[in-house]
Image 1 (spheres, one colour):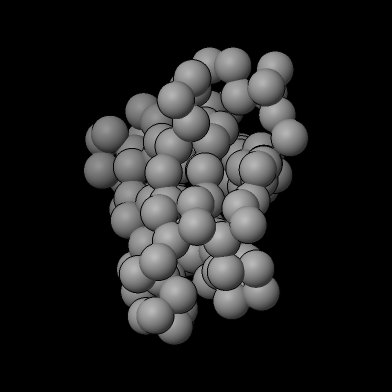
Image 2: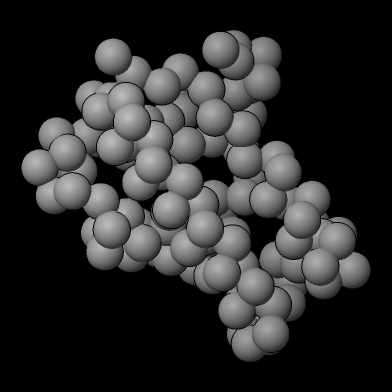
Length: 112
């Protein structure tokens, strides 16, 4: 059993709404070590980690493919993985591979 598609577009929109920045400006502020923006990205990543934990516990997939642009924000996936490691059952987490799509720029075209 595996999860074929999980969109990360909503967190991008939420981050843009919260900061009032577009994608390029958000990335710029992250690279400039803007702590306020970095905190928001880490918080979003933490909640994504909680969601991944729920998916893992409900479906016990072998693989979860995380695509989209949100996971490429500095600190996002690190926070998600920290939440997973803190809250997921180790037996399930150890049996699941979390990866990115082989073809990043065509995720939507291939979708679920």
